[in-house]
Image (cartoon, rainbow, N blue to C red):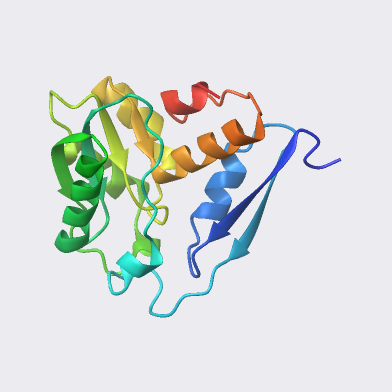
Length: 182
């Protein structure tokens, strides 16, 4: 039977081609994932209207307090995200944004890796990638290995939290330290 351990549902922004394959890839044995598309106006994947489409990008980062923040957003929305993190007790010691984004759904893991390295600072305890549309899974473990510190994306945090809430303990190798803590 599919989902014999648990079934997890996700609400997905319209037009986002990244969440479904990444959450399916992260689902451990016995966990089935299900998706419903949200309704939103505006062009999917663009900066226009992003704030309204995506207010809850903050994921649980436990007790990591000095972070580097990488986003695919424009300067204003990136600053709003940085300020939000700071308001919630995080010391954002590095910020980088993916330049030249026309449509987030056309981006690559290679560009995500590059912006993560750009955001990193020696004093950062972790790197946080905002934005579920930016493909990050393919590079999380590689960047974590290269930097020697935790790397968390909105996608990996979303699955980690869903599994935690569902009571499923199934560590996932190859996607960073966070998913080893389920």
